[in-house]
Image (tube, rainbow over all chains, first blue to last red; front, side):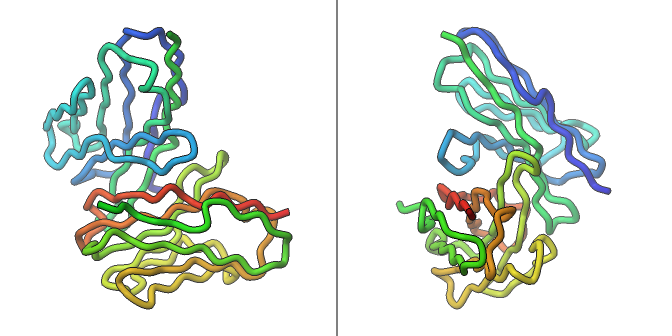
Length: 110
Length: 115
């Protein structure tokens, strides 16, 4: 079936380090979305990507829409404690069914 | 501006009881989505509406689940009768467009515990 694989599942890093996570899909996507979820809250959109090869930044966050349209990457530079949370990639299968990755749980040690 | 508003934030009830979750989408948004989040299965789309009409309910787990959107500013997700395996966080989200390509804005969820 159609799958969206996100890795790594979890990361434990030191404050100041850079972070990289990615998602791959079994199908071609026209849109890639990256969300962050803090404890007790709903996911919040970080970055939206609409074009293959697109590289978009939002502060210390940078995301890329893979050329093959089957993958996307999210990088966080110079991590800080408030970056802690779960990061989700998401994309629409068949333009009608938004699927979410299983999430990358980020822990930042001060 | 107000975001997506869900109520209640927490619900604890005994199995067999009816549970009703409520959602007020962002004003002007045309699409509304209900999700369920668990540790085992992550975020799952249950159903989504476009202009108050249910478009895809293939994610609704069983007939015990039903959702309605009587107008553009209100939706409910009902579970009757509830079971312990329904325990999860239920999110409502809305988006401005008619396609699920559009980024969705999430509420803070309802944490449901069925005893």
